[in-house]
Length: 194
Image 1: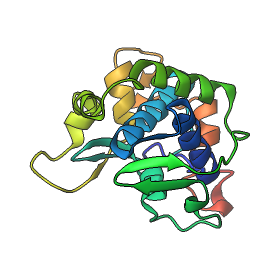
Image 2: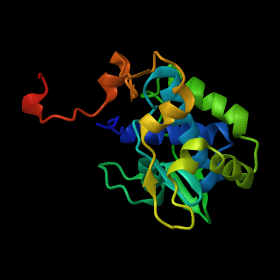
Image 3: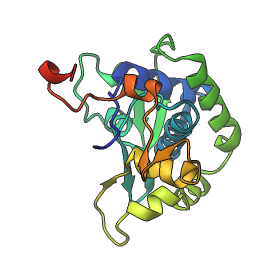
């Protein structure tokens, strides 16, 4: 069983807008996706859940949160169209109207702020090079291929907490109550109480 979280579309829009506001209102799409990936990963490692519950993928350009990437690329079909809040022009994403930040917890904002502080002033090429150096991307990305591969949350735990016995038992990640409350239930709804 893989750790999977429920993707929160509205929270993803708010996290993207939060980053864009912190970066001056617009940013290179590649860099924006790498910063959001780092925020998802860092929040998961620190608090046991990612910010938006997104699925993480390894692409040729580096790791990305796939739901957020679909959101920016216009491939996500929710009730609220993303073009209300964002516009992409020549691979630059800019905020056009704020979706607010009511769904973002203080811990979410703190991690997003830290990612901007650590990487916000870097050139997109440098952010991409650093993303290519991440252990989880190097392990799953099929070099020389143009396909994407999922980055399991278990793999992230093994690379960053693999030597911590409180995080693993019998070679498997320990699921905390916080993590379990955010995860997708692997059982049909009628079996959820088993």
